[in-house]
Image 1 (cartoon, rainbow, N blue to C red):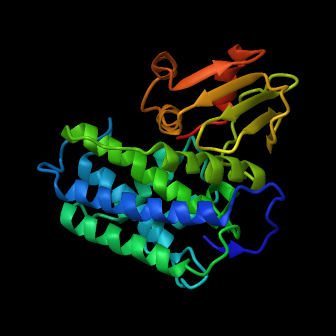
Image 2 (tube, rainbow, N blue to C red; image 1 turned 135 degrees about the vertical axis):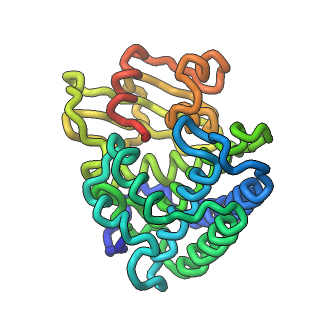
Length: 293
């Protein structure tokens, strides 16, 4: 994942405050995740429909290990180089069939204690290697998309949040996703990847409604934003009051919904995501285009 110089958008959300917060979130949640997998009595139980606790832990640890070559002070090939051939062609729809299985085949460690050690050391290297880097510096990410360095940290944080919950549910223990941390995923990852370029990551053959769809997002933990969808175009804009759909949300609940851990109906009924606006019925079409794996 090579870092290249590029301008930072004028309305960037990558502030020093958010950079400090997302680094602290990765550190703290990484330790919670490591302790969780170390304490799992049976790593062979299912954490998701397809992955055991050990496989889920290996997936997250592998992501962190490859992210150790992220900063300007890191050099050399990816620690799990087999994923490289899938990175440029990665889309939301083929991650589960191509890149993720390639990583799990190449990285065969499944012992919880060794996975926890590797995760801790990898997160430590991520933090050390990027300590003096520009958090707004652009990184080439999956599918030719572009993220600020802080956005890659937000992705790592979200991997720990979502898959930590998977493991906790599979093993019957509690897991906490703080809303202030979860909000960083919207500000630093979702908004910034749309601002800087999604590459082929969201490509599909689904038609876009003529005239596009604009959805406004607001929460107590994020900067208000409108994400506008047109034919082959995604834009992140300041809210204008003319959005088709308005969403007020709790960040942890929205992230779980976007990553298919809870249903749209269940999340809406809980009050954690409230949908309104001129054309709220357009939200499903929007989510089919602006989607997570």
